[in-house]
Length: 458
Ligand code: NAD
Image (tube, rainbow, N blue to C red; front, side, top):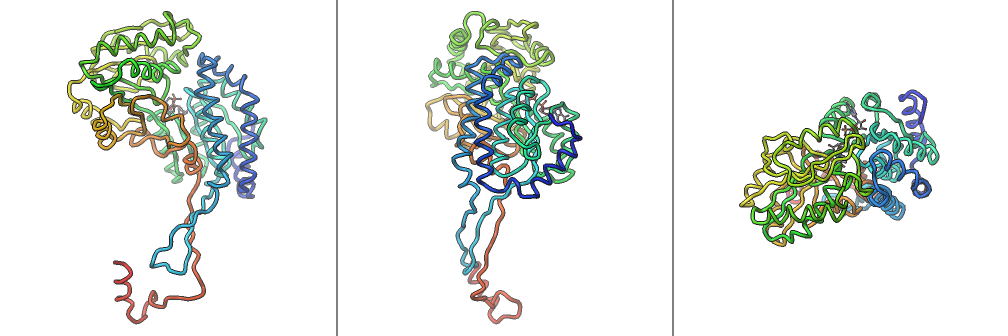
């Protein structure tokens, strides 16, 4: 961790960027290769830190944190030279003689603020985009996962010149001091409430932002769904990281005719994944802090508990819990749950579901379990949401070929794979005009100017 005042760290990064040190694409690629090697080298300490902060099992930590990031970095190494190349565009009839191109250029000095729920992945995945696009970066990880933050700081310190990439640890106050600096781009992942604060701070300098936020993501199980499979995939999406996933199904809407079966299959899936006693399962994560644990505990008396409901305050573990008889007026349905509690509502006609979703802020994710292609098409074309899956949960997040981001209150911008490169680049338009000839009709005073213009701009 740096000991310099933040504005000096920033000034050094700015000087580094202005000296053109991040521009050469081969050096960006080399930086990514070095990062990849550092992640591989520190795989064990990273997973240990994730175990200490969130009780993540090795399998889960590798799949959702280290593995995803290695996939991203591998892709960036493979394609960064192509991504960074100027792209020629077609020449309009009105522009005969000229050549147009799009030149990706780095924004400059970037700030990445990350949350605690996937503290390694959500810090490093955007960083890969920032480096690939040729920026400097200051990374501010979450104060709630101190072991992982310390691990990140070490990894970055051992790998990069701090003028290029550095970590600054701290909480809200640190974030506020950082967002007051004249960054060229801010990439924030966290809650909607803090996203608004970040955007306000950025607005003072018109700093562009990417906001990866949250919200209540619905999961709809239609009458024709394969219930056993749906339950397994919902249980996976909901109880990975004990529900502390931005794209976890927040609540279920199930067709009334399949309700009992779904509850039964969800319980069965939980037993299959975490055994009879999830609170003591090595596969099941803990709640990040006492405050979050207590917040979640207040939801337990909303509606009725179908299964689960047990917890252990000393280990901050809370069992996978399904709530029934829930209404939209209850606190559990008023805010993002972000924990292992899953309310299940029923519907008779899909219109009820559609109305409930579109009346509320646009969700980050939506999941639909059905084999009805017409319903699928209807949902895709009529309901706005950041991204989602048909007959699965979470998996759209984990592929670098799909852009990941929210819409409306769930976020601004997108990343992953090539989209991360674009998130950290300005696409500069350049038109190179010929000097061989010059159309006189474009100039004031030329003969037939008006008639020719009318022909050209039909
Ligand atoms: P948070 O908004 O509380 O904190 C995120 C970051 O902002 C942390 O680094 C924190 O130190 C900083 N911060 C806190 N208060 C601040 C302030 N007043 N001013 C400036 N910075 C401040 O979020 P969290 O609790 O760490 O994460 C949970 C939230 O993040 C959930 O809403 C979840 O849906 C969302 N999330 C979204 C994504 C996504 O990719 N869209 C991923 C993970 C989490």
